[in-house]
Image (cartoon, rainbow, N blue to C red; front, side):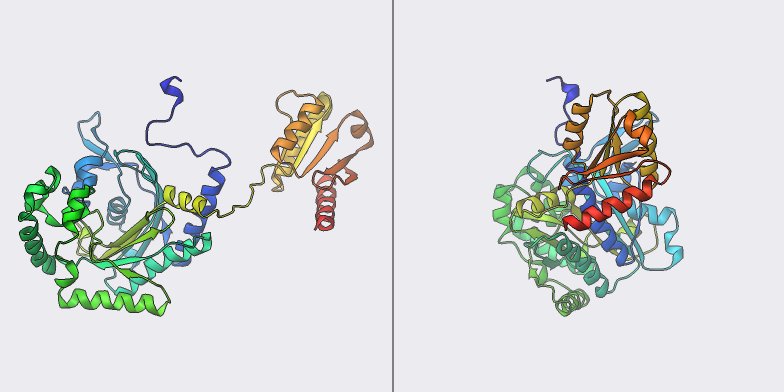
Length: 428
């Protein structure tokens, strides 16, 4: 097969039959976000590279290995967004959204780009739903963001999604933790991969997020951040747990959970799927991000969920989706005048919100009816010279086989709606 007829490696097409399911899932997350006071933000697919270097962190896998970075024709370095938070924070600052008062609540449904080895649940073009909240440092905000995601999972019918929690502290208590980590990993540095060796002095906490099996085994016995939390960070984390417990949310404390981006502070969390064996997404606090990007000190928090992974989880748990209705009524026509009449009737149906079709390929009657069956049309109607002359045609219920002659004149819409409603009631 020619290369141009294949999607690039690590990307997928969302074709009809699949895209409708995605749309339903996206609508659940969007409506859940809006119930919680979040409004949509749409940011550019590429940003200045410096945004991600400063925001995401230059010791992360995302920045070191995965970003799609290039120079534009003006010689400026730009990067396809690898995640959504940094762009949302930049948009909040640039557009002065804080002028409307805190907290600023944003959500997005977007695509992100990371150059990594494609595998199950890990693509080079990944689809992400995320929420970001700016302007509150209160632990109750952490609980709301977490509960929002869990509520959406429940609405979708996902039964095996858990919640893992940790606190990675603030810069003050993390300073002591970094010392302990550096001392520990230095004693095992001959066993670390080259990437982790480069992180040992710059940011030893990133070693905890390494995907190398050897480094993961070493990291398993490393000091835990929960033993180094300052009084304020410990109190914050305890309050988050209290709010979640009050909501009836079950969770597991995972002291090894650090997340893969440098902007995180204090609360971090993930939503593991038991059926898939990996997380559907996660998030946490990033109280220093806005200041790092040039704004005033502004606490923030949020999450990013992998829609590709969520769709895999829904499939693994055999969650049923309603069948999309692409054609409620198919008008088959015999002859040029009948086709013209069918075309006008379809237009009238569309203006009334009824999905309808007529022949667009010059088919014969038998082929038209076969196509109507492929579309899953609920009703069909055949128009020919006799029907045009009489001003009436037979409406056939494709499920029950019942037929009813109705007007195709000026009162066609009322006649169709009355007849189809009556037949639907009978079939129930």
